[in-house]
Image (tube, rainbow, N blue to C red; front, side, top):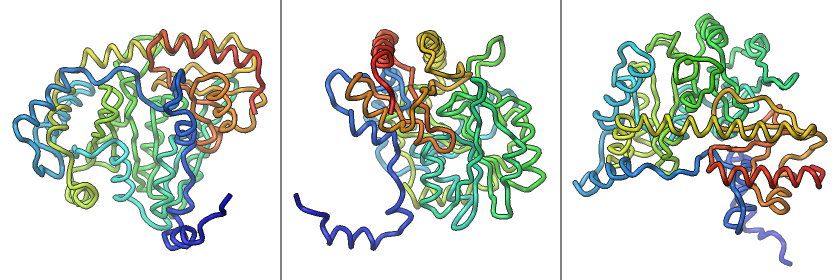
Length: 403
């Protein structure tokens, strides 16, 4: 067997250390191990099983047929930004301005845009964990230091210690990045939590990065709005809060790669420059489809949330049968993050589950501090297939020991 190519090693040494040394996401490790295998039930990534609805696809096709294949507005076409303002008025009440919205090529690019806007080499951003690995990874690659504050799992509940979060702020801190409902743990910040973070950020002159991508996937025990508590409920549109969102989850558009940033109007020119130099805008025909999703997709969103809640209950009812499994019933998003007694290496366990049980999960260790010892399951799937996956998991738990 041939050893490493010295030339390849020289090439790697010549690129930036922050890019060379960034570890692969554990989700990608799992996907690469199992993708394409026959009879694998993939529950590793954050998407549902339904394709994008036809009425949304038809809008994109009409736009293509109409010749909308040229460069377009860097901030997004005016019609989509207007539609986003109307959507937010329906969700939150009160007036919203199209001037606060900027279209990006995915929710991930929305996050990248915010990081580029707010911080640079040597700056710090507070990240409660377990957290989506696509926060700290890009930060490190930009020279930004993610400062982790654990959301602790105690007595089968997730608890955030806001005093510890606030004590983690230094003179280098630029922002607090808060994801609610949370990927991966399904934790939902209360209005009281959000208000405390807002008041602290105001006092210290910090930015808040609000990832509210899963706000519609919210499961209150009693009545209430069909969305989770939001900084938009308690903050002025022109203060130091920037929101990242995407069309991927609500409208089953993960492959379309369209998202948005909501930010103070004063930041418009700076955000537009970042979009220009990164992608030069999002294709107009994709944006036409997004308008249709916002205006005509409410029934589809409601159906998605109903399916997710029913599937969540199925998962919890199954996992309760195994004393070695610990979890909290998630209040939002569409993930179950559960601990296995005795598991030391979640990545190794995930690879075994792919090989031995033919189900694909994500390793908890990839979600940062507090994540090791857990596995993440995306349950927004066909309920019959999800039931089969749970049966396989149960059989494996009954016969195998996690690593």
